[in-house]
Image 1 (spheres, rainbow, N blue to C red):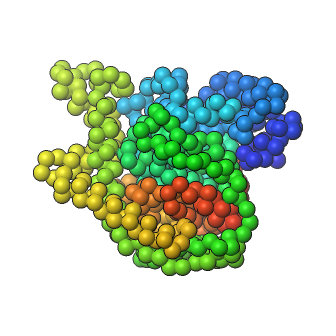
Image 2: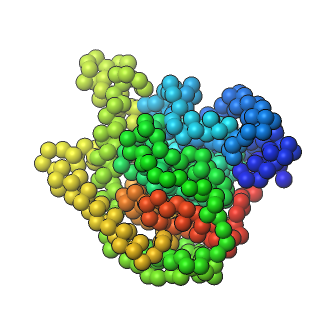
Image 3: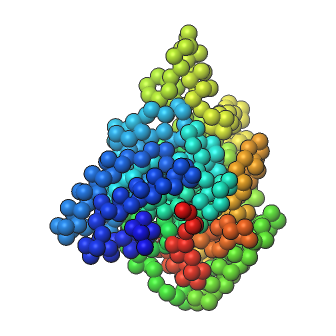
Length: 486
């Protein structure tokens, strides 16, 4: 087995035993990137020199005997996490040359634990999209099948992990942007409870929905990364002071006493037959592990897409107002007046999807329409949260598909943004409710495309999700299964 093929847990054992150095592991990943990324297009930038320096520091820490679980492990970072001295573009021309003067809290935490940062990976512009095709610079491929989407907006994170270019990645999830690409690329993706992981240094799309989380090859690695990034941060006003368990302690066989809810609204019209079959098999695996399954109802599911796109677009309109060319980022140099400069900077700097959502959000917040759109959407959001809270009175978590279909060909929905919006219907509710959710590989379509299974639980019960996910993984036997890429 080559070093880049190791899981985080396997690499940890090799590093601690002295059989492998962090430099050797990092060089292996860098060589892997050089070998396959011209075809996969996961990375927007590779910080080779800094990664090797970090690896050498990690080796010294390991030699001294005081190592953290993530010390010496190479990761990729979604390109909306601020990285000191390294370009952070958010996949947008408007930030093409932006170099942050500080690290995001999650990046800082990883560095403090001795982790190695390999570089920044591709994403939909400002995290707005479901395929990563909205990236202004490069579009990541699905490593399982050329010409198919890797998902979005954390498509580069998912593809870099699936292609074994790194041992794990950090992405962000606003409406499914960790779980959906994880499902389409056959990796594990965790969206933590809102407030569990600091958002400080995350370039905001929709502040009440955004959450940072890990993408990994198996469930244990996901738990290890969560141990490394979770926790209260006074620099983030939405961070929650909640007790922090050791998530790896949840990884035990057997689910006796656990009740799993099956939401009837998630298995209706439009669900691909192959996806349904994979999820049904996952449900049986949980039953065989000792869990009891019951039917639950989430009656306001049909309103999720409308509510999400009103709230997220309104918040995007506000958050993206700062990109006006006056302080940092792209600035149009030919404008003859201040108003022209604002208009031309934003017209040329933003892509079509970002402009579309800014317009939707600005309209929804405008005088005379606020009550009819944003306020009403916020009220329905509360009803969606109430649905989950009622469901969790009778079960410990819910199981469902992640997406209605496996991955699709690139460009299929290029002229139909509404079709892409509807593809998020099974993931956006977790963001609206602020609950944790994760995608675990469940199987494959007849065309060899991965299909994930979604688990969602009550606030701050990531441990419950990890326990169920671990047993699901044991049953599917898909842990660390990766595509055959030369």
